[in-house]
Image (cartoon, rainbow, N blue to C red; front, side, top):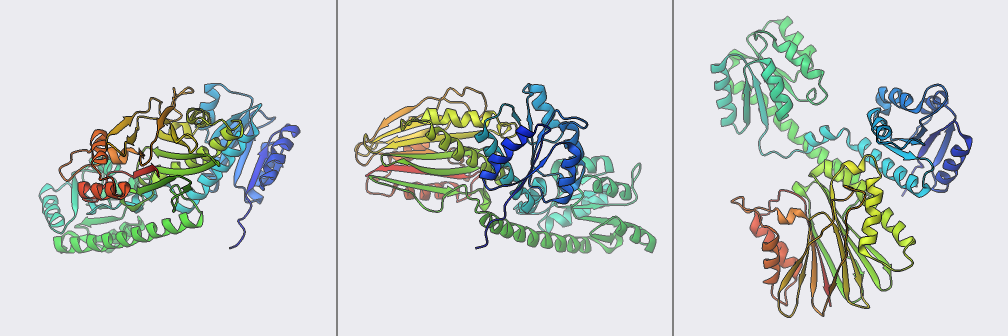
Length: 523
């Protein structure tokens, strides 16, 4: 396998001491470093080198850091370039301005070197993902797996619209109608249809202008567009194609022709989606980006297994991690970033990286006395201080297993419980987390709960994809029901396998979110 290409980092600061300090620590982490003393020199490096991240001072002679960042963001090439401000200013207003001008984060002088390195690593990883998959909204459109394509039909002739709507629905499409351009544009923004069909001759605003409005909107310009019109002259048709339309249909051709044109485009979209999903998985593999381990961990005296089902087959916001802290202590981590599919997965990558780095940092200063709530406090501090990551809500459960005492030390951020099962009696008990969502506040009120295990006892960690799962009638499962199901599983059964089969039967194997369960059993 070819060696991974080194990343290039540009450090802009008029203080040579700061430049050298940052550069020295970045080089130790195997980054290439370019140093600039002002924005002019910084821009020269951007244009001459392949820069992967910028660390920039705010207060500099000439053009300050905020203005420089704004100029950088005007160039399409640098729209997703990670940009971190390094500054002595620490007020909320400074942080807000840093984000408003296009910065990704802000680090306050005097800064912690480890914090800076963690943020650099996380932002570069996010940028790599972004480059591969393109803009988030475009990707979400590409991997949407709707059962039928949604068609927006814009025409001021209501009777004709109803005729075409009837034939489109009869052919398996979903259809929404607008009788003028204003309403059509509003519906396009709200519903994000798969295909837009529009008349040309309409009062107030015609179809040509409607098409121009769509082309000027980043969220709508890529949606396939068909003109449906009685204007069949050569000049009319050419004007339509000059506006990058997918097709042009004369009204007198009839509903069957329209349906055939729409079907051809929908079929093409389906193939494109399949290709994107395939490339998505290949790219994730190439980046070695995994938020759920492929294999179960081994820890003497315990059996640890997990089950993870991504929503609609697309990686989502759940992440699982395991740490062997020492010969007697093992850590289990389960997190859930709010949301589904691409958006959640995108931030789950960053969260997983932060969690791993924060846990390692906590362990280095722990003097071999481990506590789940202390580790969680350390993670929370890292997340809370990050300008971008702290805007994303997440739950996090941390369990420490001690094989000398056969105790489970649990602490959680968010309202997800762990479920304890007594092997002898079959009784289950819910241990609820009292901590706030991760990064929600500087002090998350995290507490440890100690669970003593006897031989055969089990503990389960779950995400809300399990709790909120619905049956075919739309009824949610709920936490109490899960605990009851686990209590009724026979002693000699594989509990996780049994729970998985129950969930598949309950939901018809259709889930509304990512589903993750970790089972820990004392042998």
